Length: 219
Ligand SMILES: O=C(CO)[C@H](O)[C@H](O)COP(=O)(O)O
Image (tube, rainbow, N blue to C red):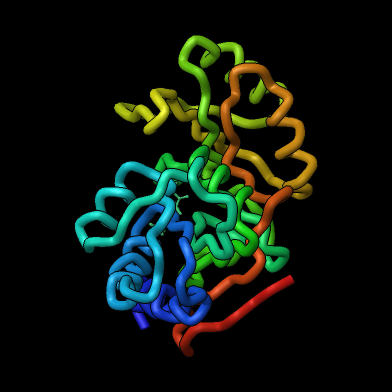
């Protein structure tokens, strides 16, 4: 299977994890878009979706799926989303599409995070993919200096403003041996809104599209 076929297969496999009658959390990116396309086929069996970005909300609406405000939801059984990198411990780097803040919020609320990816995203150590960090614009230079002290090389994502009106620094040259520790350190830096390490709240299940088919991993 091609990378795209692997993404689609993983998205199709995720449908089995959607409880009947639930409100479902939906991520952002090309793999999440395949999931939305599959979700549309069973939209009569769900009671709407919480979107992790404006782009996802638009795609859900285009399929006639009701988009629900997270503030009106006190039970979110499942969140389905992709990743830029994921390890066997289901720790992730996310934010390649710039939606990391709302993704992390919806993931925090959801009881179960189901990650859907192709096999190129499975890595031994996180960090080959530059770590996205959402930053309040006035804090850009200060945060960049602090990240440099941690050994990273931050680069401003050009011509990109998040749904929340902030900027993104993509941090290169990090070898992330302890994702939970680094995520906690980054959370302490004033001016950082969200970092793209999803380790304190990792995925619960990985549906991995591979050339042999979809593998299910949990940790
Ligand atoms: O975190 C994300 C967006 O902020 C995406 O889930 C991540 O970038 C993976 O995207 P794709 O499914 O297109 O590979």
